[in-house]
Each structure stands twice: as structure tokens, then as C-alpha cells.
Length: 117
Image (spheres, rainbow, N blue to C red):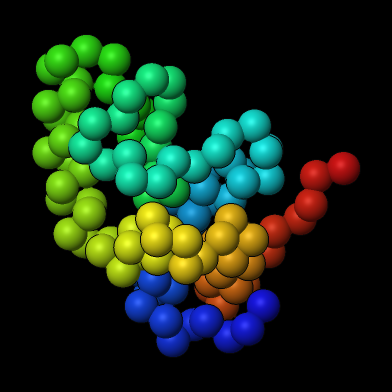
């Protein structure tokens, strides 16, 4: 992976806690979930969450009340993680880029990831 540490989306990713990064990494490694793009305000049908929503532990809403809360939360997160979300939604970064960035961040924080067998 080219050194992307200076890119704005990478800086946004660095704002996440180790637990949040691991939640996102585990979803990538599991391979059973596909992160959504442009799923910030009206996720329609099934579980459609962007990587930041997954990292933060938010689920897709299943009621009108939860939809309103989801939209409010999404708006706040969208403002905080604008560079990452734009890079993801516009295809400037891939799942592989995210995975490698997470590993670099955790390595820089002295967290070792061991592969599952």
C-alpha cells in the first residue's frame, strides 16, 4: 500500500478508537458484510451502513423513531468524518485500502493483530 497516512481520509480514520477500528476490521475480515455507500440518510432495505456507522456500532433503523435518530446521528458523523465518507462514497478508497490503513494505525499504536486460523 502506498503511504496514505497524509491523506485526509486516513486522518479521519485515526479519530476512531482501537475498539471501533477492530469492529470495522472484523467486518472486513469476516467477508459476510458489504459496506454501503451513500447510505447516510435513508437506508432502504436490509442492513446498509457505511464503515463509520459500523465502527461506531450503529445499526440500520427498523422503525420510524429509530430512523429519525439514525438521521440525526448520521448527520453528526458525516460532518466529523467528511473526508473519509467522501473518499469512500466516491470510490477513492477500497476495502483493501481501509483494511491496510486500519492495520497501519493499530501497528502505530502498538496493537498487534493476529490472523485467525
